[in-house]
Image 1 (spheres, rainbow, N blue to C red):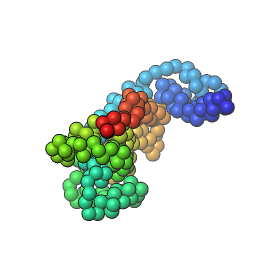
Image 2: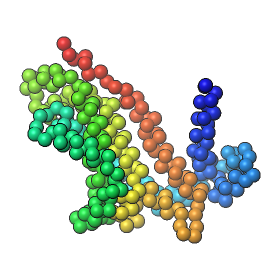
Image 3: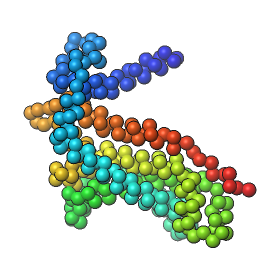
Image 4: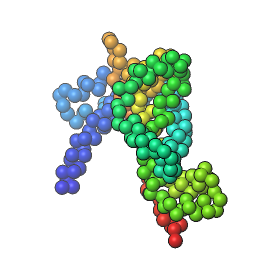
Amino acid sequence: MTAVAVILGMIFILPAVWILIGSLRPSEEIFGSLYPLSWRILVPSQVSLNNYVELLRGEFGQALLNSAAVCLGTVVLGVGVSVLASYALAVLRFPGRSFTFAFVVISFMVPFEAIAIPLSQQFTEWNLANTMAGLILPGIGNGLAIFNLRQFFLGIPESLREAAKLDGASEPRILWSVFLPNSGAALTNSALLIFLGQWTAYLWPLLVVSDSRLQVAPVALAKTFSEHTSDFGQNFAGAVLLSLVPALLMFTLQRFFGGLSTTSGEK
């Protein structure tokens, strides 16, 4: 069974390896190595970083920085909004709480494509088209991140909050001093959800931004193809760069994924 698992894993990872190797070889050689099929498909005749250099010299380099700025702003604001909304839905008692939570759940079940066009028209009327704010704002209210944090907050013992209230702590102080220090894993997961949603966004930037100076990386990558020309080497290089960033983030932040104990303060 181990041998079967290894073989199946190699089969599924083969396209990713081919793209990585293709990004290091001349464009004309990428598909030339497919026929006749041989081991040369995974062994380039020459290894070069020219595809990456040329790609980053063009619009893609600026677009990559734009994507990073959009993701950073969205994660910072989005995590803040998600924390406040999750705390209210998990801890506070107010009329309509169940209805509000149901609305949040429905919000991330509706495909964004269904509301993208009317939303882009609304943003145009608000003069938010071709602005950084127009790219950031739709990603702030991430229903899945709110749901993820709310479920985690529900697992924090009520006795910890009651003890803090007896000590005179306000709700913001309880959130900051009790809930957040015990929510490292949930905060990391929610931040990654928001980041990945923005990093891979294509339709929304395409609708709301026409200024090339604000173009994001997925849209810039698509422009390596045109009606009459295409550069598969640069396209593969861009795909590798776009995949490498979230992969490195996952690898770096994996130590925060483990759940933290929140029962040690109970009597």
